Image (tube, rainbow, N blue to C red; front, side):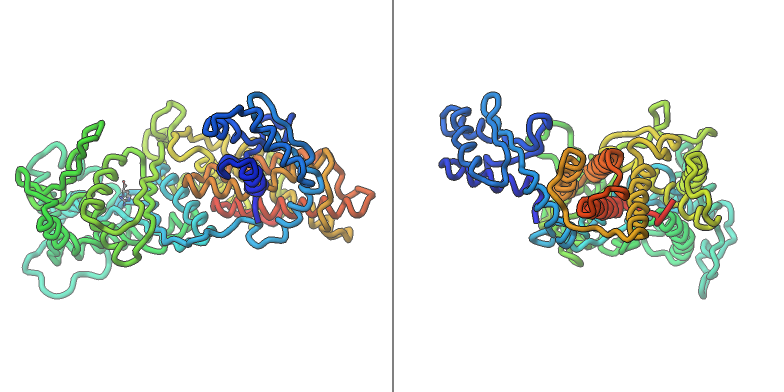
Amino acid sequence: MHSFTTWLSKRVATAFVFAGLDARFGQVTPSNRPDLAQFQCNGALAAAKQARSNPRQLAETVASELRTDPALAKVDVAGPGFLNLTLTDRAIADHIADLAKYPRLGVPATAKPATVILDYGGPNVAKPMHVGHVRATVIGDSLRRLFTFAGDRTVADVHMGDWGLPMGMLISELEMRHPDWPYFDADHSGPYPNASPVTLDDLERLYPEAVAACRSDPDRMQKARAATFALQNDEPGVTALWRHFMDVSIASMRANFDALGVQFDLYKGEADVHHLIAPMVEELTAKGLAEVDDGATIVRVARSDDKTEMPPLILLKSDGAVMYGTTDLATIKDRVAEYDPDFMLYVVDQRQHLHFAQVFRAAELAGYGHADLEHLGFGTVNGPDGKPFKTREGGVLRLSALIDEARDKALERMVEANLAADMPEAERAEIARMVGLAAIKFADLSNHRRSDYVFDLDRFTRFEGKTGPYLQYAAVRVKSLLRRAADQGDAPGSVLPPGDVERDLLLTLGQMSDAVARAYDKRAPNELCDFAFALAQAFSRFYAATHILSEPDKARRAAWLALAQLTLAQLTLLLDLLGIEVPERM
Ligand code: ARG
C-alpha cells in the first residue's frame, strides 16, 4: 500500500519512461499551490536539461500520456514545465478505502530489517536527572518506537556515565570524610556491607562539593585520580563502594524512566567495557593505530582534508586513566561483537559533536564492524532568557519535579477547560499524568532535535495550538464521536468519493506513510509531530463543517464515520510513535 505521492510518483514515472526519459524524474509531491492542484511534479525541468530539450514541450508530452489515466481528473502544465495533478474523487476514495484495510495502516515495513542500536538517556551515576535529560530520553525513545515499527530489530542501551574521574572524585571525598569505613581499609578481609553507606541524596550533595574541591586544589585532585586508578584496577574496597553508587543511582534512574514511560533493553554503562580496554589498547598499538605521545596513548584521527582542527583521541592519559572516548570506542567494539549492528544511533547533546567525530573515526580506522555510526545531536532546553533552563532558585530542574509540575499544570488546564470534570478522582489524576507527559514530550519532539527550544510549561500544556494535549484531545474527541455513533446504532462504512467538506481530510490521510518515512530517514520525530498536527487540524475543519451524527443520508454518515475511525487510528499510531498515550475519555 502506498501513499498518494508514492503511488503517483510511480504512475508519473511510467509516463516519463514512455516519453523516453528516466523514471526518476517522476517524483511527485503534494502541491505547494493547493488552489491549483493537489499534487505536482517538477521533473520535466531536470529531464529537459538532461535531454537538451524544451521543458514545457517535454512536460506536455508527459501530460498527454497522463491524461489518459482515469484516476486523474486534471493534468496541467504550468510555468516553465511544472506538472500539476489532480485526482478524481473516485480515485481518492478508492485509495483511502484500501488504506484503511491494510495492516499497519498502509505503512510498508522496511524491506531489509536492520539491527539498530540506540544509545540514549545517558544519565550519570550520582548526579540527578534533570530537564536536559528529557531530550536525550524522549527523542531516543521515539526513534526506538519508530525503528521497531518499521520492522527493524532495535536494542536500546541507556549507556550510563558510571566510570572515570567523577567516580574517583566521589570515592576520595568519602574517604576523606569517613577514613574508618571498611572500603578504605587495605587490610579488610571478608565481605563488605550489603547496605549502601550512602543514599543518592548524599551522592548528589557530595558530588558538586568534590568537584569544586578538586578543581581548586591539585593535591585534592591527585587523591581523586588515585581513587579512579584504584577503581579502574579492580581494587576490592573501592569497587564495593562504587557498586553501592551504582545500585542507588540505577534505582532512581529506573524510577525516572518509568515515570516517563520509557524503556531500555540494556542498562549498560561505561564501566561495562572496562575489561575490554587493555586488550583494545594493545591491539590498536600493535596495528600501529595507537601511539604514545607525551606519556599519553592516543589515536590520530585527523585527515588531510579536515577544515577544522581534529585533535587525536586520547585512549589513556599519562597516568593510565581511561577517558570517555576510550569507553565509547570499546563499547562500539563490544556491541559489534554481540549484535553485529547495521546502525548505531547516539542521541546525545550536540555539544559532544567533536567527541563522537573522534570516536567514530577511530572505530573506522580500527575496522570495528560495518555499522553506520550516527551522532544524532540535540539542542538545549533554554529558559526565557535564552540560556540553559534553570529553576527560579537558579538550580537545575530535576526531571522528577518537572514531571510532577507538568501533571499539576495539566490538571489545572483540564479544570479550566472543564475536562474530565465528572470523573472519579483517580481517573482524573491518571489523565492529568498522561496529559502532562504529552505536553513535555510533544514540546520536545516537535522541535527539530538540533534546535534549541524555550521551556514553557504554560504553553506546552495548552489544549489549543500545536501541543501534545491538543492532539490527545483531538483523538479523544474522535473516540467519543465513535462511541456516540455506536450508541445510536451507526457504524463506520465504506468511504465515498469526497466532496468539498471532506476532500482535504482524505488527501491528508493518504500522506501518513510519507511522514513516517521522512521521520525514519532523517531520524527526526518532528516530522511525525508536524503530520499529526496537520491531520488533527484537517479533521477538525471537517468536523466543524459537518453534522456527522445527524446527517440524514445513512451511507454518508457511515462514510464519514469511516474517516473518523481512520483518523483516530492514524493519530493513535503517530502519538504512540512519539511515546504519547491517549486516554479513553476526558
Ligand atoms: N553520560 C553522558 C553525558 O552525560 C552521555 C552518554 C551518551 N552516550 C555515549 N555513548 N557517550 O554526557
